[in-house]
Length: 105
Image (cartoon, rainbow, N blue to C red; front, top):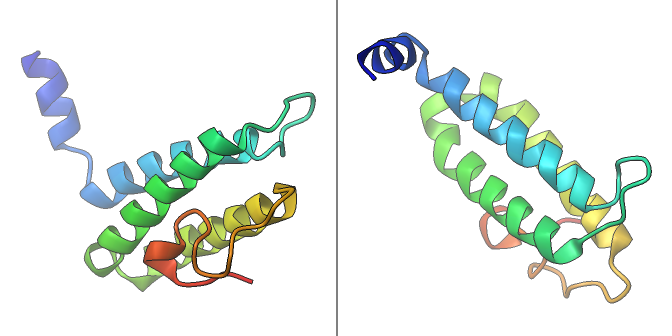
């Protein structure tokens, strides 16, 4: 346990935040149906995108625009992919993560 704690202590926070965000993005992309031969599960995608939006919004002031901008771009792409995959689109401002980002169109 001490070895693992030492290892994680050496990793900058921005790297841990980016890694978590990339995992959320990848999972959300799969659940939006963007992976080959994988059916969409929009309920799961909604949860992942919402969590990603919260993380990116909360972390942006801490990690700086240089690191936050690509995360915001990826988040926006997922929000648009979700909207495209939805049979019944959410009203503007009520899609996944839009509570944090504002309406995406």
